[in-house]
Picture 1 (tube, rainbow, N blue to C red):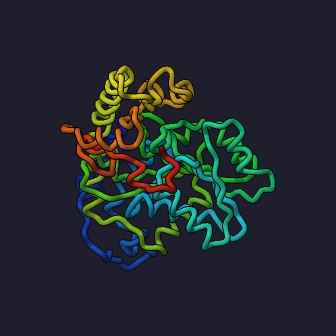
Picture 2 (picture 1 turned 90 degrees about the vertical axis):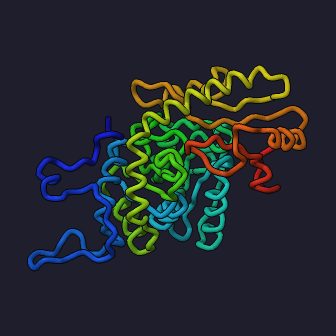
Picture 3 (picture 1 turned 180 degrees about the vertical axis):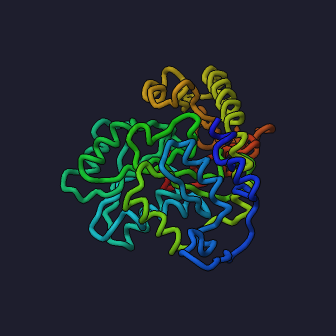
Length: 349
């Protein structure tokens, strides 16, 4: 219901022109009197009001902030939460661009960069350490493209015990499947380019906060001063996409489950990596982290074929329904050989 109805203006607001329209201005009129709430459209775009209200409602947060991309959202979080001498903890299996950016950011900024493997017991605890230097723990669950699942509540407990913030990249699942704030996350990051928009015509990012505190203020300040803001038209398109989120995610999850079951029995497929399969190592955790009343596992899966890399590339060349391209969450069916995209430093087979 939130995806469909949240953020709509009240009757009075609608009568007065309210929120929800396409705002394409760069300056805002300032009538005489007290200082206005909206001053300049870089930090105060009125076209964001409805979209951010919907995002906050979906993720059960206190507020949301739109960005020009998911990478811009990640950069704002790093800028807001990390200082020289701090430690950042990141999963070894995660979106390649995010991991690369964080490594480079830490190298330049005097921040220790630590990796953990969510499939190895004790790995996250060891990476966080006990010296209090860890200030941000980044979790991507399920992780692209291995689709390993991290226990969010356990990660939150470990992070908070050392005074660190837990940020969860929930791009793949969306709030319809998992709301990390309910399990202890401090911030949720979305590449809104993907499922939230769902039409492959917007590049956008978003951060949702669990609390209205100094850290959240710092994230919004990083957006304001960094200038990585979303255009008004892109915000309007994103709002359009989120209105059908509940329909698209359900169908995409059902299709992925059906495909995973079919491929699991194929003689030329050695592994099907999909948390929805009962024999997936993290299936139980994935079920436990579902939003109330739903059992879905998302629209993304990976397979490993017999015969190695050459056989994988040969299979990629044979597809007809799928389009070889890098993205996810749109109306198209996409496929890629991830090792080819990431290169020899990826760590992916």
